[in-house]
Figure: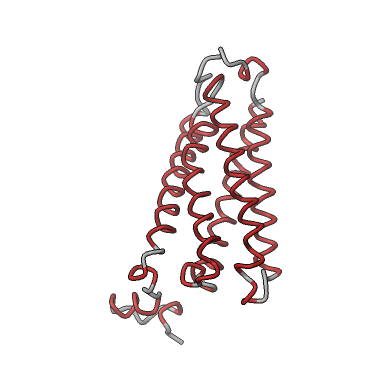
Length: 196
């Protein structure tokens, strides 16, 4: 069963890497979805998904959950995947003025979904049958210090990303561009700041 847990964490990390590229490159930098009125609903769904990942990571990855704690993890997985489906349904209208999703971004979405669902599946498959009983111990142990550290990183990162999504809905915060932030900091040497 340990190899299933390791695979679950490998796929979790792959999901987080692909998701970060999608978020920071496509959503925030290239398309600035938070500034596009037709994309606000999609942007809010991304924030909700990120916030759901906080308890999801706790119940599935921080500890080897059983009983009610495991079923709480199942609930948060179902909630996350439901929000993701609403996101898919909203992308047609959200991205219409951009010509729809590009092949690159669509590929990232497919990869992120595969990695995320694979991670959930491997973690669930690693559970003994007794863990699914409601009278099971809430904690069946830990996944070790490395697993705890990864779970904490996912929880902290997801919380920050979720809060960032909602902070960017504030017009003053959302209007700050990378170029204006660089000029305020006096940075001119990086390509993102307009350097040649």
